[in-house]
Image (spheres, rainbow over the protein chains, first blue to last red):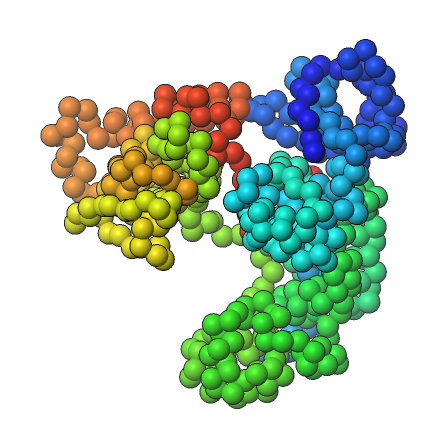
Length: 81
Length: 445
């Protein structure tokens, strides 16, 4: 169901209604338009706080991770319909 | 305890098919499909949550993945993700904390709210809880559903929330109490299982209404004080108050267990797995600033292997059901301990007695007799001070300080940043697990 990806990605985000929402991300040379942010939660990995955005487009669901220590984005997992 | 009909206003909020709903919330491709959330994605792994769709098709919590696949061939299975559930619970409970100052975190997906004095009547409370449910849907996730029960007591509030699932809201008051109890079976309420039911039936009680009207003195003769509690609960008398989450009592035990896969046996990592479980339990206990008086180790052996062990006077033993399945041993610490070295040392000794190279399928470590540090030493250890190459205080202090330093490193760089040498190469075995009654790690914003 889920495939592990764990690759650094470029993300365009919007700050609106008091929240951060990923809008588009670039992975492996392709752009993906986020249709919906389904769930946002955070995890502690040691002292590092990672905010996980579970997002989806029309075809797939993605797990994007933002490291608040290193200010980097990763595509951690992808699930296809 | 005064015996009068409770005038409190208690609510119970129960998230429906919680782990499965959170997974469906995160991944819309799982919505509307039968889904099982498993402890491990192995055929022997246990289904710890089933989605509403899967429950309708007959999947039950506690089934193995193999059984669940046979029952619901179209089902999808995912491994549980504890940080995700804790984070969602934190956000849901934070919303509930805005309704009252007294919220009991009963489990990872259930909370009791004492709304007495905050709302005039059940109708006003119901309206506030419906608004909270809307907020959960809007702010946390639109796929999350919860059942709400409102009643004068904790027991009746929980009974009410169980009546309509998913997304129900039921109010029990003195006017409809008999009507609701008449529709329920004895085992439909919390606290009555098959054994209590058999005992109740022996004295002629076959329904909850009969229990309600039974003379309390006779019930106490048969069940002791539990008879009084049972009778009070169905009569709407409050016998247990809502405990605010910051006033919850310290745990009586801390433990971790793991269903050991075959690869751990093949790769010779049984001891390493036990050490990891002990370290995990010890770290949680140290975070609570407690010391353990004793440690239990349980080992489950594959049934096709025999079980051999020798017990001496220091250790006591009792058997898990079925000879040849494994066993449990415990040892008492001379002094209550919390440092990694004492805990891992004791666990390793117990494993050595329980296991002689057979194929293991289950390991568990439990730290019990927990108590805060008293600062007092046993007289025997004061005497031992002169016989030892290092003063007793310094030996224990060094172990304690080393464990504290290791915990600080783990806090900063992650759980696997520092470990015992035997744990090297263990990888993802014995990962973080979540229990329904465990609310550690749930933070209120």
